[in-house]
Image 1 (cartoon, rainbow, N blue to C red):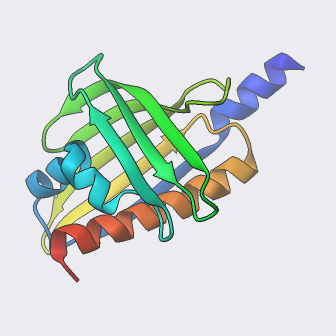
Image 2: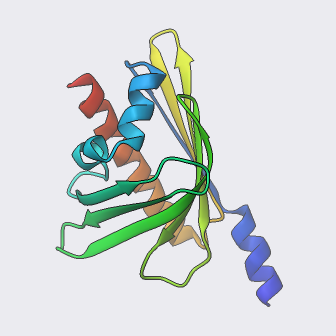
Image 3: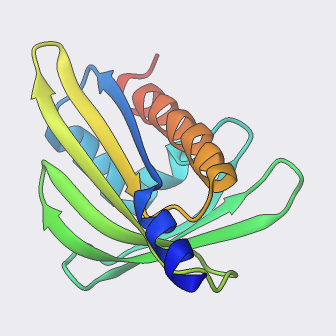
Length: 151
């Protein structure tokens, strides 16, 4: 049974995209600088209560979320790829859980009317978690757009 669980986990993947009227450089900075992250991170109703970023391969990050019910959740991980201003790859784990790390790839792809931000979240353990991530990433991208565009 453990082999089935591991291979199933490998197949759960999520892709979320949004084109934002800003440069890749501006969006990359907003994604990687704590003072910006704290202003837009999380879906509506979630408040970013802290962000620490050591932006280098092997560097770690830690982002705190206060959920609408008051519960605090900390996300932590390690950067595997840092290619300013076009791509980040990092591990993702809820600090209080023993689950294996998930993998997030964020690409900032220049387009005619701005930048397409593409989030690929992989190694998701189950369908419920995938659904939560989808809601979270859609909210994050909406918040990011409002932060950098001001609309």
